[in-house]
Image (tube, rainbow, N blue to C red; front, side, top):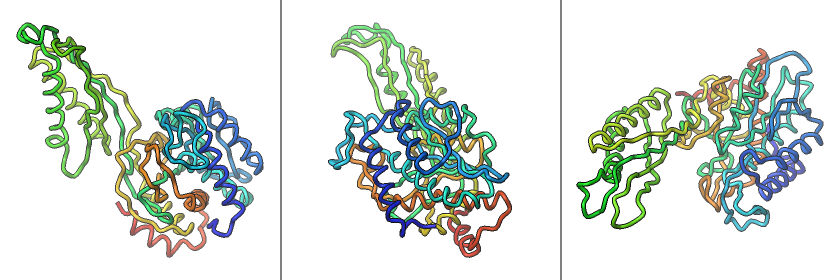
Length: 402
């Protein structure tokens, strides 16, 4: 399945992407975005499903005969970033920007919906389209799940643009592809005093400094060299004056892991280090956790199927390195097996940069892949053989083996 000869549709998808890019809405505020998606789907005769979502929506294609349900997901929210691309369709809203390509993802899923609608009578089941809000706050997937939209879903698929992959390339791998993203904040309580008489107090800055050093030993001495983890302290604050030892020091940061066992162990050791160092210096400390999404772990079967579908869509399949960024698509994979992939966009900057952009020539590839993977999954789940799969399967197995 390819859109290379579909010039009117490709132009339309680019128009949609640019309209979304010029009118970004932050997590939980995607009211205009939701209305626009509803309008575009309505123009194609695609039915909107009734799920209780404040923003975002769910649509369905197929279901004309009994069969499995396959879900495709696109995130729709923007980031609180001031855009610096200089594009003619740059954000019209100060302090908001599609700096992670969710406008691209949304346009791609609309394109896939158009392609699938054309073949609705052939579908041996239902394709459920999840236009998800609030991915950047890692809350939207949970909202979609709570609405019941994952009920009955046999397999779920999504994609993310990848600036460091060339257009025409797709990154697919079995197992972990994105990390668990946990945040922490540590508050160290000491005893303030004059800086000239430190022995009269308990210095929380000294305690915090030793904690920061000791925490770096967690990865090097507690995580196997065959696994990976990151512990990053990104902010430290304390004090109000050059000649006063303060009462309190606060630092925070993030932990990234690709395995739930490693995730639990790193958090356990983190708390041991914080509590132990605090006690050694006569201070006290409290750790507050902000639990992010778990790691995105692709099901081997569906990673294999995704590679078959990608080849059919004309994409070159590669095995990418896992990304330490977080993604709440992971929550869908707790509800149903599936696969999350990286679609090459040859971008000039990484995600979340104020000059981030995508190469729009990747848009038809993304739409074609999403439609293709839905068709492939439905064919497998319903027991129908997908035409032309034999040569693709051999290639797919080679590039997605764990």
